Image (cartoon, rainbow, N blue to C red):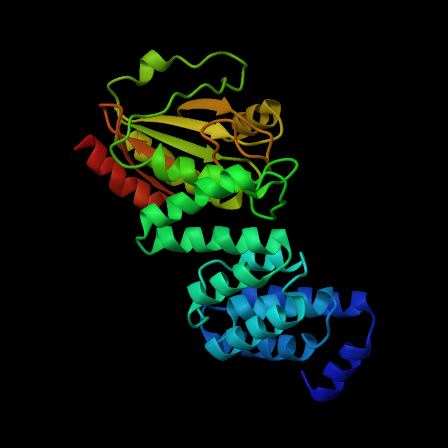
Length: 317
């Protein structure tokens, strides 16, 4: 994108600028993982992200998430300098939580949490710090921060999946806590109370003494649907394995109609509606799998079928 086009965009309407950011984001998603394939889109975003409107913030957010270390540092500096006390910064922080390209990401997040006057930004930074602590092995520190947020962030909104309706950051903190504590390896399988798609109580006696895969999914979730054939083959190859699918669709009727066209083995439960924290184990991810051994103890959790296959082998063995 040449300089004249960038200048025209800078002086164009807000709608034009946002449409161009959307276009560049699609190009990034469609490109390969290598930085060279993303280079043209990143160059365009550097030119667009020069003003303090929503399009400028969005362009800088994409540079923070997808750009080089230099891009990330420049975008972070731009965002924090200009929008440190702007609640619109909160979803940007939530959308970029690992800090993969930003030097001293924990320090940057800590400073932002300490200096911002916006409670939404402070809580989002604290949540991202807690997730980073868990990912890097600082388990006790991360869990303590999540417990605090689950108690104190009840009125603060969040853009993350599983935040509930109305969306609340405290719900996200509770969901992560539940996963880390109640769904940890070796823990007993929590009670499953969701009804079947026909509105009946599931027959839990049929699950005892059998290894299980609990699959949180939805018909609107492409990765969930893509994984179903491998789960079906896994079930066929291991007759003792029990599949328990928990749908997050808006209605059990949607699931029932879908299964008539594409049958899938196992027990089908419904906990919807989609977009809210699941009432079953406060789950907030799709797809999300829990593998259980024949003693009713959790082997582990996963978000991909390849990991599930390895854990099933462990559960059966």
